[in-house]
Amino acid sequence: MFAAVTLREIINEMAEVGNNHTAFLNRKTGELFTMNHQQRALLENAMASHDLSDGQHQVREAMDAGDLLELPSSYQHREFSSIERFCDSVHDPKHKKKLLKAIRGKNAVTSFRRLIGKFGIEQQWIGFRNHRLEQIAVDWLNDNDIRFDKAA
Image (cartoon, rainbow, N blue to C red; front, side):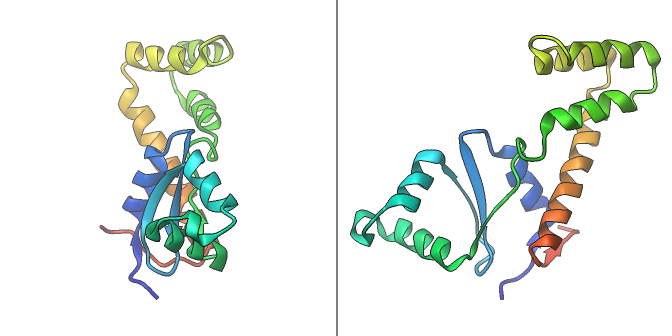
């Protein structure tokens, strides 16, 4: 078994992954890495190992052995759900009403970001989002029996 992963590493990886990439944790080595959808399809669909480089072959073996765990991505943790929850948590009733209306319209995320800037509550949003990511990461780590260090 490898040394415990750090919660911060998991959260950072989750936050960085875009919609065209997937992040993984190798449960045997503790290694975190990201691959795009084309790379993933190649690994999952390669019929013969000679179609793969040495590094790809190692990743494929880890996949086949069930050692690779897909980290939750920002899309999997429902970024929009977090935005809605944040809007509901805003104490100023006028701001809350405007935020909730903005996220129901076209360009919801852009409108949301513009309004939190205008209202001066960007740091509140960042703290809220980071706390939500931490909750998701801790749940995921516990569900997968992965030891982690909260401190680092």
